[in-house]
Amino acid sequence: ASFIHDENWLAFNSMQTWNGVKLIYPMVSKDYNLKPVKPVLMAEGAYEAGSEYGFDVSPLWIRRQAYYSYLAGGHHTYGHNDSWRVLPTWKKALDAPGAFQMGILKKIFLVRKEWWYLVPDQSIFASGGQTSGEVLNLAARHKNGKWVMVYLGSKTTFSINMNKITAGDKVNAFWVEPKTGDLVSIGSFSNTGVESFSTPDGWEDAILILETSGGSIPTP
Image (cartoon, rainbow, N blue to C red):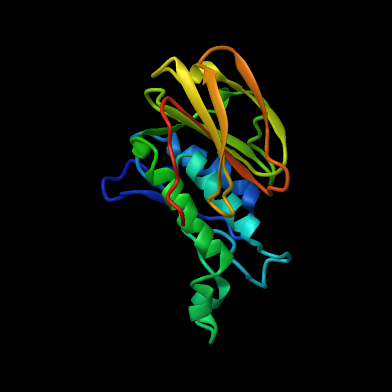
């Protein structure tokens, strides 16, 4: 909506990507960086269990769409095929895996200190960042350096510039599994130099949290 972005009546920008998950990060990023600043909503991607996209819209696909939107600085709307079509199974769809995992996403963000100060920042990666294609590795931080959040779209190894945590000398690190909400503590690090990480075995995707004090995700 760049040609009408300056209009006073335009409160926010939104987009539809259908089955184009690779479009989400660049489109949200573009609108996030427009001036004047306005909210960005990734309003419609592929619906969970949808049959019209040419591939299986799995819970992993649903998670990728959502985290790509958030780590680009936007908001995300989830949908399920059976709900929007109002099929007889629509009530069952309310408890679909992707729907449940959107609740985990919500909790991951709400327990971050001042989550609304999230700033997308790929320079957090010393290596391994990825912003193009269907499988991305994305990073964002608190604007005052209180925490860093990294989303890894698949099994991978990468490294982080630890000096992005500027609000304290010690950095607590832990994994969160987006599929289950399970936490795995990694340990404490200095906020200097570069540290390498590998996502846990058996996880389809992963979130790395680095922060100046301990954090936890309420059990979903």
